[in-house]
Image 1 (cartoon, rainbow, N blue to C red):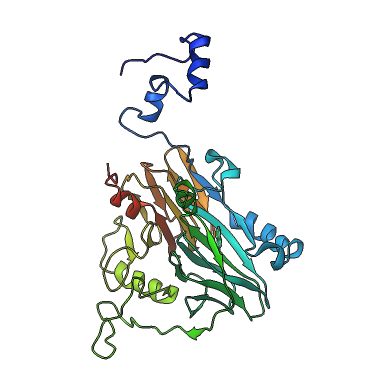
Image 2 (cartoon, rainbow, N blue to C red):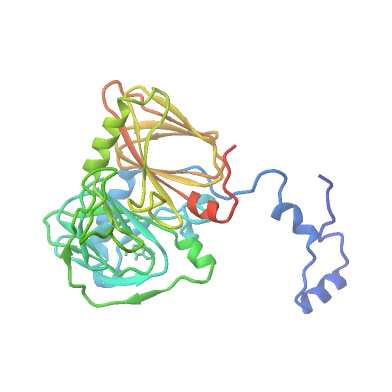
Length: 342
Ligand code: 1HN
């Protein structure tokens, strides 16, 4: 590609006249805006260790009462994007949230979509539009755009979970805001989808609404991965997508979630895709090779791969499986017509 003219080549008086008229020449920026063949990304392969996060988050529990935090969260920020920007990737926000016994994170709703992966503890619930979702380790709980949600904890031990939001996207689009609420009337969650391929009929009707399932229980997901692993060739990822059970489509509009199992001693390559991806280790230890970056991850660690990264995952254990939950930007990119696999 031909090199183009630079700002430095232009006379100072011309540049200041342009600035006075709120005008900017395109050609000095054109190549960085449209780089040849592949995008520039500031997202670095990054790794956040649970061992580092946990004590700091518990300390936040001592330092900052819920009234002063509303959401007591340490954000997992990608250093390549600038820590202050609170981004794991261009569109993904990640945070580790702590709720102590007896605390409530007050009800609100907002434009960003959220999902939570429970990391530790028991006894807390998230109430989503009136539905009380128990939070057990490994559970994936959705809080789709616009739905009221609050977190309540009447158990005895701290509860910690990973929040995944499309906050950076919503901020970029100038559509991010929240509305404060009052405590919700909570009803117990009904588990409406007892088995794959079977949907409930209430009075002869299928479940209405865009988000028929809010809580994906870990035990069921884990059992399903185990069952699937029996019929999956080694080296082919044992993987299940978290879908909307009524449509079969992605469970949220912007992000896709999946659960992945690495059998003992197994190595898998994931396809090189344009969507950035985050990984959370629900169980087990392993290695990830993300482009040139090698990561040794342990249970409850979180890491991210930029778009178009090559990703190799390895379970070096001879006896224990690894279970990961992943989130990626593919639904959003598909809607924009820019999703690709290379
Ligand atoms: C939010 O509403 C929660 O409801 C957690 O738990 C993290 C980060 C940014 C904006 C809203 C929650 C959040 C958030």
